[in-house]
Length: 177
Image 1: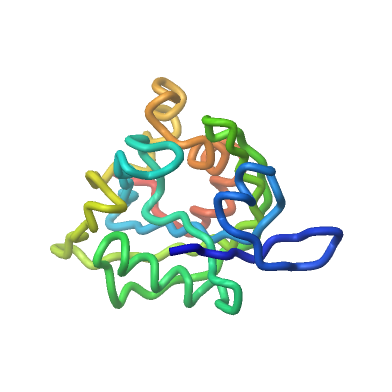
Image 2: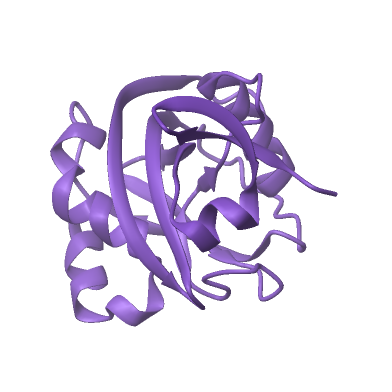
């Protein structure tokens, strides 16, 4: 299935095939979701079949909205499709932009709507194996240090979020644990 994502070309949004946008490093819309529980953050390990950054750890959900889809609807849809997570209220944090080499000649140049949600205790994700090979909860208080210590195990965008946008993403979140 060919997926077209909202991409800026000559200052105007146009639908461009997702792989082409990454091959050309075109600036495009994206969504990232962080799911928290009791001072911990949910990480997913990307499935080995993903066309970039397979097997690396990322935040709960990173994706691209469909051409006519808003960020919140996209975030809700992909949490369900990737992790079987439903009913977690999401709070919009902000829109940020980054550019990162994700390997294989592919560039992510994303304008990202960031959402954060708190998951109830006792509820666990049910990963879609086509998307996610594993999940883990990590204490928020030590995550940045863990990523700095072993950067090759984590996606470039998670590294950027923790280094440049941590205060924005995790404001009003308890860092205990």
